[in-house]
Amino acid sequence: MAVSRRAAAVKVPVEPAGSRLVIISNRVPSPRERGPRAGGLAVALQDAIRVRETLWFGWSGETAAPEAAARLVAQGPTTYATIDLAEADFRGFYRGFSNGMLWPLLHARVGLSEFRRSDLAAYMAVNERFAAALAPLLRADDTVWVHDYHLIPLGAALRALGVRNRIGFFLHVPFPPPALYECLPQGERLLRSFGAYDLIGLQTARDAGFLSDALAACGVARRARAFPIGIDPDDFAATARRSAGGRDTRRLVDSLSGRSLILGVDRLDYSKGIAHRIRGFAQLLRRFPQHRNEVTLLQIAPISRGDVPEYRSLRRELDELAGRVNGEHAEFDWVPLRYLTRTVPRNTLAGFHRHARVGLVTPLRDGMNLVAKEYVAAQNPEDPGVLILSRFAGAAERMEGAIVVNPHDPDEIAEALHQALTMPTEERLARWQSLRRSVWQDTAAEWARSFLAAIEVPREALAS
Ligand code: GDG
Image (cartoon, rainbow, N blue to C red; front, side, top):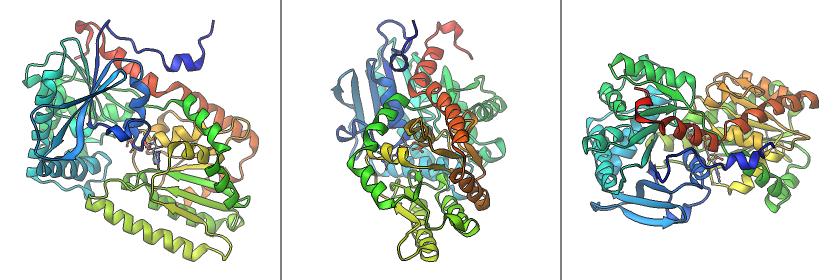
């Protein structure tokens, strides 16, 4: 008998009997935030850990004089363990090295990166502090899974304390080609620390290839592998169906007065290409005037990392651009661009996606991009909208059916928008069917299952 899709999505991951999963990420959701919240990592892990005894370790989000031991709070099958960071460590580790140096470098924006030796020292020290606070909590048969660019040296720091567990690492963001990675001072030191991991996962085959080559070049005998992250599409589709009839979506639909909705949803981050997207939209209005007064672009861009200077200047740039585009193109009864920097509740978002004729996802570089998958999952199967997707999102590697664009060219975005807005129903349906297959294949549950299955093999079989 065929297993229903729902049952397959929540299947318990393959695991040795009694073994616990230990997840380490920079941020652990605070008690108020435990549940769906903005941020791809948290959303994906919520789907993955529901069914297994889990210890989730990380920073509390507080800066205070740090104590040696982690604080533990149990909630269902998950225990959250958090530590505080001293203000200076936080600045150097988080704002400085992680978000001021690594994030731009890994997104191929070397020009935006800023290196300071003191930041690197804080980054290494915080990773050692994480290791020292986590090691006493570990049981011999725990599977340890470290997440993302903040914590690359954590595996090596744990090994230095004698931890012999299986330790896996997953990088949620892209990895750049050698000519860019080389710009990182002492970059080899970071690469060598990958040698501590039994399994290294990235989002795409392309990124895994770049990291594997970099590791080989500095003599680390490890190959990175691709594990494409996804969402819980059944859950998102059900939320979208429910929410499409709800108050917020009705208010939005009423306010559009029959105009087509183009939707963008992103953290306010320079990697997401929001300015390029707005310029592409303005180009649509200039070059294809039949859409004037017939479309609205709703851009939801909740403020993120507001204390990092680059993000403050991005915000100023977007405020100005949004004002200029509306000033130039608006009519007395139509404002083409609606731009929100506040967080919108997840179920409201799902309803908006369902109503949007076009999902516009144009990052300049993105590890995967879950918004593209959420847009697809939210569609009405009888009357689906069209996804426009940047070729530089990891999602583009396996989402045929989208209109794929190079976001650096506003004309290309304008042409894709015109194509999407005038696409015959038959083509819309065919494209969406193909997208649907990929979103229901590469789910969050499948991502976690396949990563854990690859690491929870007999020791001798763990690839070196
Ligand atoms: C990193 C990688 C990778 C956004 N605005 C609101 C809101 N969101 C939700 C979206 C989506 C999530 O946040 C964003 O996920 P993305 O994948 O698009 O991007 P990042 O945050 O940059 O995530 C990325 C991901 O990790 C997972 O590995 O795909 O490449 O950069 O779920 O819906 N949610 C709510 N209100 C908002 O206003 N509730």
